[in-house]
Length: 280
Ligand SMILES: Nc1ncnc2c1ncn2[C@@H]1O[C@H](COP(=O)(O)OP(=O)(O)OP(=O)(O)O)[C@@H](O)[C@H]1O
Image (cartoon, rainbow, N blue to C red; front, side):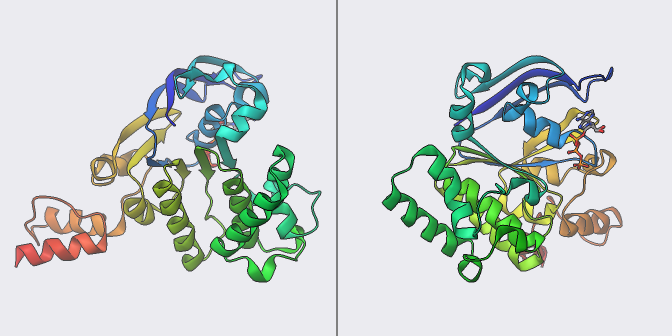
């Protein structure tokens, strides 16, 4: 499912300056997008625009159009929109329903609300518990979980609803490196299922490996947009408050100091290894 933003300018209530400024972008169906930018550049605000919470919940002044699969976002009913666009909060605590007493029930909760048949629900929860490695936690109270465990449960609860578009706001911020990698692998699996994914994430090394495209926000404007290769090998990213993958930065420096002669910059260690073999 595609998502288009056309000339979006948004100002929060009681504010005079817009925080999103004349932003247009085309999110193509079935692709994974990394949304980067420094603190307060407008990433979370943009996510809330994409899922219709702005202006329905946060209000304020919004100009421009949000179009989901060819239809204006206002034409969707709230329940329908929630099942098309899934969203995971930056803070996983906010995501917990607060009404369920086990991880198992928490994951089933959204499906229960949607009236998914019981047998189908049981099967789906079992699949997700395995996929998100939650077997040992399934009978625990959601509030007893660590931040990282909550983050996995929050994501499983979204995947349970099977939305076509998933907006994940820093889904790995509280996870250790191994669990982070596992979440990225799940993102890859969701992509294989044809989902469209927008990932707010600071870990550019992983974005380089798993994303198709990168959007860089700076001061509420879309400063750079393009394929992972186009954006994450562009030194401009550093001036715009973003980061480049470590290996790319390393080679950028090595090229500038004439330590190595290459015609393109690598994004990952595997690519770097291939390049060095060519140079030999
Ligand atoms: N409810 C609000 N009312 C007024 N201003 C807000 C509100 N929420 C966010 N802002 C402002 O909007 C700007 C963008 O914030 P936003 O949270 O979207 O950025 P972000 O890139 O997600 O930041 P971070 O990486 O720190 O989460 C900031 O200047 C912030 O202070």
